Length: 213
Image (tube, rainbow, N blue to C red; front, side, top):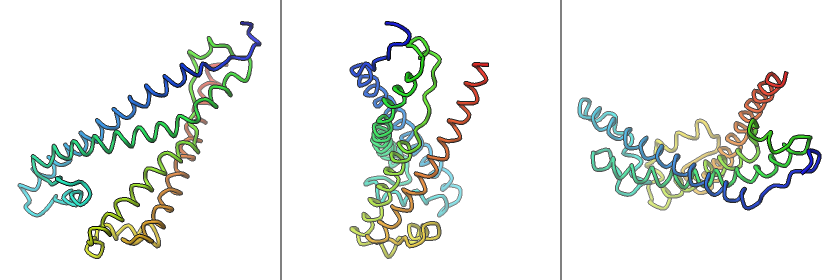
């Protein structure tokens, strides 16, 4: 193949890579979620022994995670829930974000680069795809948790959830309030990801320019 010939993307290899990376990312997010909730629960439990009535805020998670509470046994229930939620979230996030990889590879080889250049390549973050992935997860999470409180009939008692209205104008522990809150969360997360990606890509561009010179 000549240097000027366009580089064809190996679809089979790309699909296999995305599939493998999805599993890896899901596994990593699952472990992070599992151990974070496990450690946080044990910390809250032992701090609560010294200060009865304090450090028990994680008990609120029992509303959304059946079987969970701030206790040694509840910590391992939380470990399972944290792993499940983290793993599913990680898989969804990566699968949505992976939609931009083919475009990035195609754009990278659109110039005079060859396959040998791929070794030193750094893929940019695609802000819209990252924003769509994280924004969707955050918005869906708020929708599910809020409406779960409504279904349980504890919406009026959920004073901690109602505090979100201080940051999300119009939000309330109700079906209509959850929709408005989800929109706010999605937009905020989306814009944050776009900004983060722009900063990251700018740093990568400066680094590559410095390497080339």
